[in-house]
Image (cartoon, rainbow, N blue to C red; front, side, top):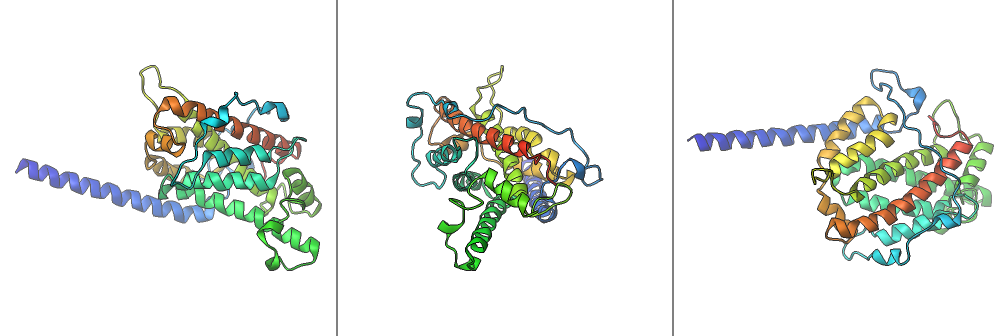
Length: 312
């Protein structure tokens, strides 16, 4: 009888847990539709968005070709993973292709890098849509801005333009630097209030790139002094606190905790890069992290040159 009562109690407790989790997810998605556009320093201070101490990345020297210093045979470690949409080899190709020799970032391969990163995020389950949905909207927005600018420059309706004519190869949106110059000339960027500019949108992607980079750095690390590895949820939470939490309102920061609780285990992450154990994963993750670091550092430099690191 006691066993039966205990089982009933445990089932009710588990059901209550899932009901609460579902309710928080619904609240999360509802609130994110209003708040997820990330604010800047000047937006905090209200009950909905208490101020946090902001993270300011130390700027590295501008990128140079010799910085792509992969160990001999490093890329041969990256395998194609049959049956999955995310491919680390494709991600590396696009990241490397986005780095221009003059210290600029080419937008077409940069956005294709995000296409792969979105596939990575979507592989982690529906709870991660909290992040991936808004990232997808930002990638689409930059492509739409490029399409619109290309159509106007050629005197054609935007609807008649093909994806190859987005302007991401030769137009004003060919690179981060050319996009900044074009949008500043067109008065599309405002430093006091929000505008749906490519520059502001790029800044939000830039912060999310840091979140992913920091999370992968945690996955590449070995165990602690007790031989224990941090869970992906813990690593994601730590990365979020540095990269995104300072720019999100309090409500979203609390709701994001439920996303981290729902992340799969470490072994699932390792399988996404086609390895079976930590020893195989570490060198591959370090190659990916190195590529993300180069792109993030150069984007940071470009944003800092135009004083765009705190666009509202």
